[in-house]
Structures are given as structure tokens and as C-alpha cells.
Length: 222
Length: 252
Image (cartoon, rainbow over all chains, first blue to last red; front, side, top):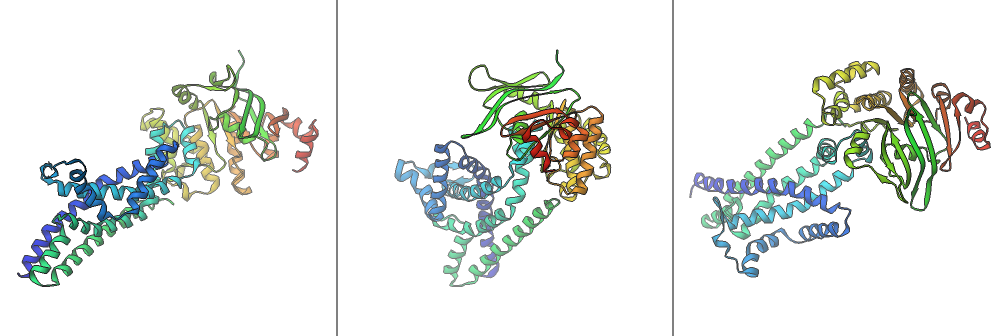
């Protein structure tokens, strides 16, 4: 196999990697906000549930969580997941997204919680006295400031996510790492691994650039 | 009908076992400037926070500009419903000790945000109000600045403008100059003085004794959760009756 063919096949895998990455962010960030809210709930039962959620998802391997989401429905409830399709996505891919989103939501939740709790009480009080409703206060006053505070930590997670997508190989999702492994053994060559590494590295380079730009755009106040 | 803008009756408030307000009565008439003085921990700020809905009282009655914020039909104070609370909040302004400006908003947006999204004014109307207030605060050239680029005195004047924007019936000041050095204090005090000359109704918690004497119509001296003494500003400062007041004023 020549290098061109190898790269082409890796590129196909890269698109799947990109898919896992994008879907995970889209679902895990709002979910993380909800989990953070739940974790900060005054009701001790609610906050304990979310605390437990976070500790389980951060305290066990993501790979194991992926396997559980994928095989759990069949082993526990005899659900034939092979029949499940959402548009072009089979359950293999869906399970990957669910697993990643649940896991990353736990990490994001802790980051958001830190950001929200770092806000001074005075901001809430000023908003209250000016007559803002709770949701106006949250979306207009608090959240924009929280985003600025948490951005560096979020960048960190996002970059980790790029590399973590390779864990989807345990479900034989044909993402880039799975492809690289197959190509490497088929061609008895280390080149597919190196090429995949370059892809990951470039993707993270782009992400870093974007995140730096966003951070800069918010540096107009301190 | 009395012309009281603020009416507080038998206000009681405890934090846990600590009784901070032990039955306070305070009435402020339209156009009146009342200064509240007294040692730290005497309940001044708590009283102000109760009047501005930031703390809930245990029992008593608060009426602001004719609307009842809370009353005590039986044992515990009962507050007005959400809609009424919003209505009442538009009738007063509050200036904080540490400004509490929104750092991610420009000066203009700090002032206009509530006008547009709470009071449903058009952007043009809000901008016009903002320009007028900034001129009054001598900050016309700072509309597009962010709070972090202003001095403490300028920030406090922006927060006064913000508190004035919705045209409230009364403004509360919670130690408005305590976070400022003497030079910056002057500018803020002169703005408050100008408001007094326009007959703005104001309640000012302050440690600036000479300012209280010169600007306030009436001074209330609080200590230990009660009003120890109150009277016309000049009389109270120059000729206090109560021993405790004399002691406190001797420190200035």
C-alpha cells in the first residue's frame, strides 16, 4: 500500500474522529452546565445525586464506561442494539457519543461549578436590585463572566478530548486510531501511527489557535 | 396622607442567635436626606439591606413609595409576590460600597441594560437617559470605557448613575466612599450633595461625619441593633444627647 492510500484511509477515520469530537462537545457542555447546577442545588438529595454522578464518571475509566453503554442494554435488558439507527449512525457510534458526553459532562460540570462559585455575591445583588429576573441575571450577568473564567480549563478538556476519541476503538468504531492500527498491522509499518499522530497534533494546534483567539476576544476587561 | 417614601416599622432581624435589628422604626419623607451613622456591627448596613430586599426581615413592616414590601400579620413577616417585588425594586436604587458594576459591560451598558431589559425602554430612550446621567456625573467621555479602566471614584459615580437610571423615588447608599481614598471620595460626595440639592430622597449609611452633618437633613445613630438617637443633622453632631452618641462622635 502506498502512502497516498494510507493517508486517504486515515482521513476517512479522521472524519469519524471529528464527528465524535463535535457531537461530544455539543452534548457534554450543556449537560455539564445542568450537572453543575444540580451539584450546587440547595436540596441535599439532589446535590448528592449529582455529586455521585460526577464521582463515578470521573472515578472509572472512560473505556469501561464506553463498553458499558455499548453492551449494557443487551446484557441487562436484552435490547437488540444492532437494530438501532439514528439517520446514518448505528448504535456503535451512538453509544460512543453517549459515553463520551456523559463522561465529559462530569468534568465540565466541575469546571463550570468552579467558575460559577467564583462569582462575587455582589454581582447577584446588583442584578437583583436593578430588577433583573433570575434567568436574566444568569444569562446576561453571570454566564458571560463565567465563560471567561472557565475558558482556559475548558481548552484543556477540549484538547484532551481530541486524544480521548481514540478510545472509541474499543467499540471498533472506525475512527482514526482504529484505522491506523489496522493499517499498521496490514502493512507491517509504523507509518500509519506516525501519520495519525500528525493528524491529532494538527487538530489540536488548530483548536489551540481558536481557543486563544476566543480568550483574546474576551480580554477587553479584567 | 403622609409623604413618607420609606416606612419601616418595628423591624426585627436575626442571623442565627444574633439579633441584629431589635425593632427599628424609620420613616423617610420625600426629598429628605437621612444619614445613618454608628459603629461597625451596629446594624446600619443590615437595615439598608433589609430595605432593599437583599435580606429578609423576621418581622415588621416595610412600605416603599406607597407599596407594601412586607408586613407581619401574625408572627413572621410576609413578603409581596414576585410581580410586586419587581415593581417595588424599580422604585428604589442602591449604591454599594464596592460598586458591584458589571465588569463585562461598558459604562453605557451598565446603565442601560436594566432600562432596556427590565423597564422595556427603547435603546434610544435608554441611551438618552444614560447620556444625561453621565453628563451629570461628569463622565460623558467615559461611556465606552469598561469599569476596570476607571478609577474607584469614577466607578462609584457610574454606579450612582446606574442606580438613578430608572428614576427611582429613593436612593440608598451603603458606605459609598468607604472603598475610596480621600481624593476620590470628594468627587463622589459632591455628586451626592448635588443630588440632595435636587431634592432627591436619600438614605446614606456613612462614616463621613462632616459630610453627614452638611448634607443630611436628619442623622440616625444606630448601635447594638437599635436607634440610639436621631435628630436634625447639625444638632445631633454638635450637640448629642445620649452618652453613647457622644462617645462615638468623640472618635471623629
